Length: 185
Length: 222
Image (cartoon, rainbow over all chains, first blue to last red; front, top):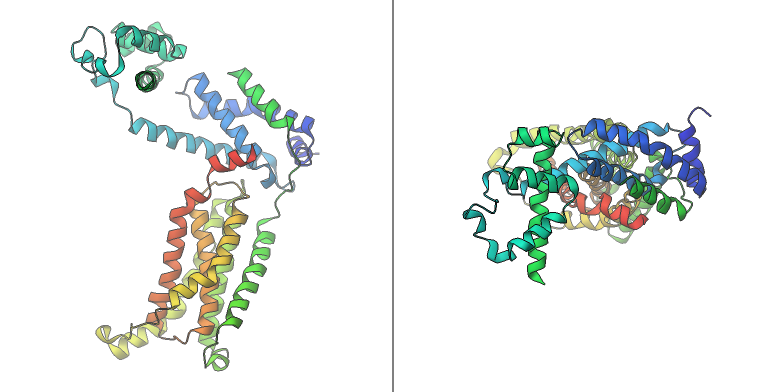
């Protein structure tokens, strides 16, 4: 058989779980490479989210695979589409986030404490920061608490300025959500 | 995170049920056409045909216009079914453009003659108010069947897929309605019939993201 993936997918379509598992396990590293090449600025967990999105999509539309056609273009079409969807989702969520660089969020600044009443005390905020994923927590600690510049923080954290910006945006959104949720209880 | 992906693969493959591969787009389009044409023929038989139907069916311009409308519907159906199969070229999406241009063009000479005869201000635009509802009625079952069939595919281009599905159903429905509605003024046909077909296609396109989206397809597959 010229196309081993095609053979595995045909078996998967008949309900062969072993062939299906082999197929998904073999395409996953390739998907990781493609996603990483297309979305260099994303963190590992976000890249993995995209890979999982593609796997779920492949599973959902596996009936659309026609064994008379090559497998890779079929997979790439789904991957490209899901990556574009992910980019649209990210752009939409970024459009609803507040640009953090222009906000005072350090504890020392008085303006930063103007909305403390709405989400409780500093202790609560510290707890929320501690609950963030490591990359986002580091970004907040370096940029907002440590008042480091983007360049310094990128150097210290051995990451890129773009990745730090993304992590900070996400951290701020996550903190807002956590603190509002706590206050709603 | 890698553990999560491995866990996901385990979950997806553990209860992987057999799936019936979809037929090729042209086979699915043929099946849809048979169902839709049968329904439209039934609807025609339930309504009184236009009084001049036998002479119209011998008129070249009428036959040409109807053939172009049908070709637009068939091409749109083919393109819609190809658009939900990953790996097909995006060029398929443009397949109905040529027959659509021919359909519009078939009304062109008549429109020019009417403008020359009546003048822009005197064009007979008062129309039978039932043409648009009849296009909706004739196209309803084909549209529902089309939506159900398209939902089995991949929502790669939801809006374009929905526009094409709507164009296919409305194009076919229009051909059916022309057999029962005695309207032959080209400008009226252009405005009310082709206008209705375009409006219905645009409405379908607006609903595209609700009808065809990854979230619901993934949820159903879980």
